[in-house]
Length: 417
Image (cartoon, rainbow, N blue to C red):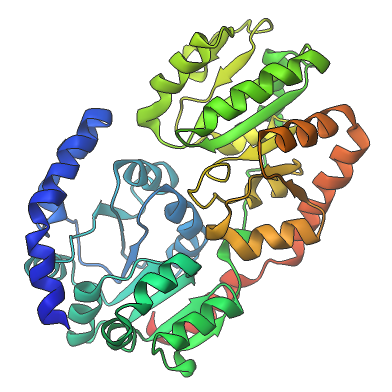
């Protein structure tokens, strides 16, 4: 079926370019480095390992694995992303210790140009990125393709099932799959993957590493906000969620007059939009980038900086993880859990189904169906310090007891790296 897939991809090229242009109006970085997207990349040296992490979430998930690879015998690693925010995150996490460029679009010529320049010995793909031409070209060159931390949502599985013959042929060219759950293993096998190529390793996202100085820095930030004030954070929010959060916050203020809301949009191109929305709602708003020392009279603190969500979680009392109050599928809830912060999420967690269910089973957080329930749950956490402590400690324990995915993944990949 590749004879249909590739021509179809070429037909979509004008739409792909138009999409880049449109995205550039919100984030001008989309207007630069187009050559890299078509395989014309510049790297200092050839790569022992190519790690592909599509955006910010995958880059963060890949961080423990990449750090482990870097601790090996002087490996050269190139990390690719598809988004400017992912690119920024790679640079923030690893600086110059890895090479970075955008991944080539899945056109045969683009992939060949990239491989001719980078010449990787192994490709590791994070989570759910299935690119038929990249996988096929690597396989034909004898480059092992490995999937790490793979998860397949029900929606992705249904989509791939429509072309299961084609996708199955592609997946059979992959050397190993390290998957998060039995459900992911079952989906892969139903798509045609040999069971021997699959191992359930759990999620690398449990390998949360908290910097030793984080709590100290968080306490400094907490003093800036007002040491006695309660703090509710809504992290990684998307369009349509901020309105819900702002209305709930307005009602929470009736019972918690000193409450401060920390609002952190998922995408940096929305920082200004969300700030205007909060101010238009009548609140006193301060942005992280303003670096004001006295913000004791602030209602809403907008986290408009990259790479500081962990710090902002650590300085908070209760966390709502965004992408879950709308049909986005949620974001990673394990970071606040690792920090001992009670976590709340909405009804749409299909991208993190097993993890969210585990959080609920272990009483490390709460799920809500709508704004009314969100109000009740957050109000309860804010008013009950003992409940906050018990829930936070359950989160810490959950993280500690589920570590080990990284070790299992590296063991599975050892013969290829």
